[in-house]
Amino acid sequence: MNIRIASSAFLAVVLLAALGIEAVAIAASWGVRYWLVGGVAAVVVGGLALARHRHPRWTAVTALVVAGLTIAAARVFNLPTEPGPAMALALAVLVGSAVRTQPVRPAGGIAAGGLAVVVGAFLAARPHSSGASAAVALNIASYLGGVTIGLALRLLDERSAVATARVRQDERLELARELHDVVAHHIAGMLIQAQATHVLARRDPGRVGESLSGIEASAAEALRAMRRVVGVLRDDDDPPATSAGPEGLGDLVERFNRQGPPVVLHAGGADAAWPPEVSSTVYRIVRESLTNVARHAPHAGDVRVVVGEGPDGVTVEVADDAAHGPAPESRGGYGLVGMRERVESLGGTLHAGPRAEAGWSVRATLPVSRSS
Image (cartoon, rainbow, N blue to C red; front, side, top):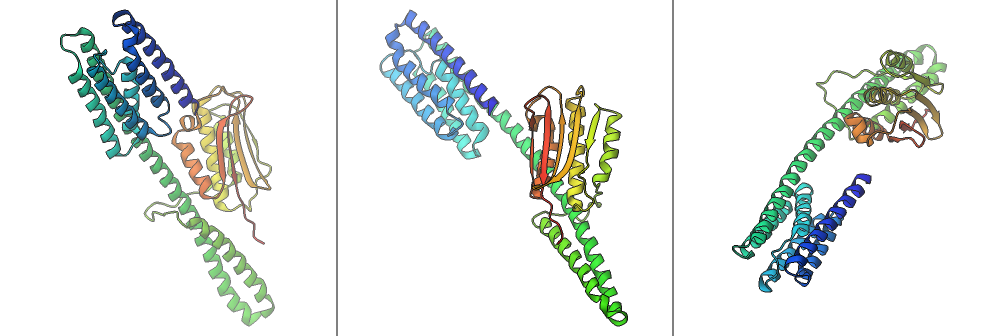
């Protein structure tokens, strides 16, 4: 959001500067009254360019209509060639934005409309006029620049979307593998207990109830894990994933201390009774977060890992005191995307961003259901 505000403010300053230069140039040659029509139209189109984020398609279409009418008025009433520099810049922004964000057909239609405006300006220009030739050249360059940048950004966005989707799918597949192993473990235990119950029924009927309670507990745990699997695809050709519980965090931090900033671990609330998918997710969050610290904040003086359980579930936070960096998606790369996908698949929440005092923080909360 801050980047969008900054870019809009920069565009507004550039448009105002272009309007001022254009007004001074026409006032010194044609006279300021000849600029009124083009000036008003440029202000309208510039305003549409600043408001493009809300309705990118219709702001672009409206601006192209205004530009076409302005070209016709300039030709009919013998006014300076339009679009002028300010309007040409605003149109380039609108067309480029539409090419980047809109579906193929609307984007192609708006790009064709921009080309029609450029061609119309060329046909309406007065022959043998150096000022008109310069305006037409500016319109062509602005249009080509807007379309080229829009296409390049569209390609980058599509590549990023594909990469993000692949990371999310990989994380979902790994989580599905882990949950599959958990369910298989409980079902195997239920089978063994059921077989043992047959023996107890003949030899010691009084203990049958105890055995059935164990089967019930295993079934409840398997059912809870199975519910998490719903909607998560599993690739049976992949090798089984390995899980690491809370007891593995100490080894992870010790290994990180040998190659990165010093880390302090507070994991007094780690509980071996957490579901395996929760324990492995805690481990993954800590590992990915410490990797990001080593990559983006190698000069951090204090890194803290806090793991515990509260009313809302298991919480894990990794915080450092390095200077503020870029947005979470930029700093964490696709690793943060994978963490968020895993946490949300388990019904939890994840927040990553700058801390109020200094540094960076990754905090996740994971719900935990206990057997009754």
